[in-house]
Image (cartoon, rainbow, N blue to C red; front, side, top):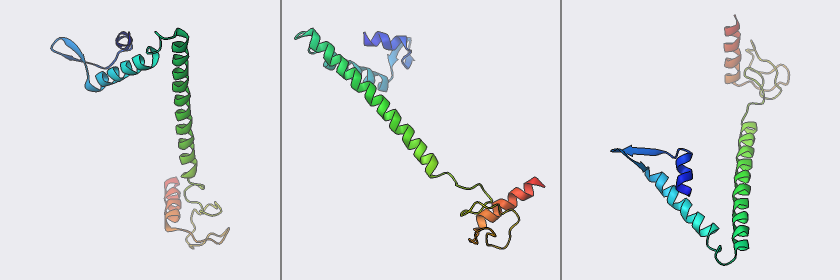
Length: 132
């Protein structure tokens, strides 16, 4: 049953000499999937059909909850990294107060008195040259 479903959804086939064979990773995945399918869903069917249905429901619930938990965690990590490492002020502005330093060559921010890094000066100068 599982192999037929995999064929329908276009499992990655490789063709050798007119016969279709699964790639190594696909065949290992198929074997492991079938083993889990037999071990989880069909072992207790003979003992009690209700228990088999409960077992199937629990495992499917765990799979869905795990999938959504991992997706939620991945999205939170992506947002945290994006917010943590983004620049607070645009290029060519003071790193402390955000004042526009275009054309400033004194080395000191006129707004807050903080020292200006050479990189922010160069970025502001390059932007000024591009606009002319």
